[in-house]
Length: 294
Image (cartoon, rainbow, N blue to C red; front, side, top):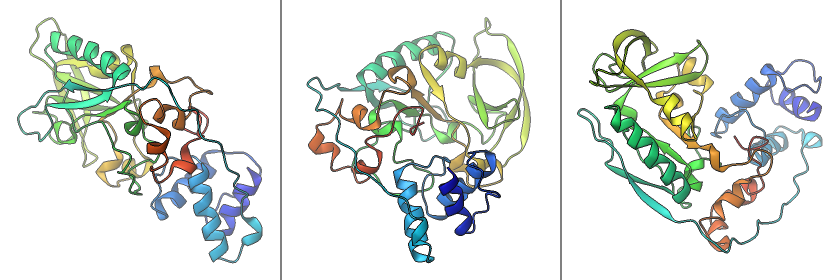
């Protein structure tokens, strides 16, 4: 960690004293470097970020600070491949969302159970898609090379079905505890659902008071194994709306912290030959869930 801080300081990303502690200050500087190199700004120093740092160190004349990047073996070929399953979603007025999308079969089973419960309460689940093909690995600040979309374990609700006009939209997005996490609420006409008063957040970084019958979609999603993710720091600082991330839910129940690897999960649905065609394969295949993959 001390070596990382020295490298960041040499590149003008001021971490302060190189104390070997990966605190908030170091994380922020890592995110700034990732944004500057058009790498997903998650604050995680994986092999991809280390390659970017090495390139910058070489360019700036600090080759002595470069990192040694070893190689990692491919995961074993899975004998039983999981299938992609088509599931239904809800189109709502004013949204360009889809009526269906695809998930890995275990995630699809959990999603169908979630949607059944949401519909029974009078709610909806909109969609901006889920499956991301391995050929779609374009480097971008808003797109992670370790996204669970590639593994079939993540879905996106329609971005235009919430956070624009909270007074009218079916989905109402509330900032949780003033931090960078969200609670997604869904409007319903079901009289058995109590009226809630929430302070809805908008893409313009304003807050609107909404008082209506609201289903706690985030809570139901968690019950079925789907977890939302946090907003990116740059969004809450007034940045691009793509950093809001309120729409993203991922089926984390399928992953074992400290054991599941990104490459291993891809190999459950693709052959190793297909996996190797994924541009960042050698940088991400070894990443471990909740250690170097989040």
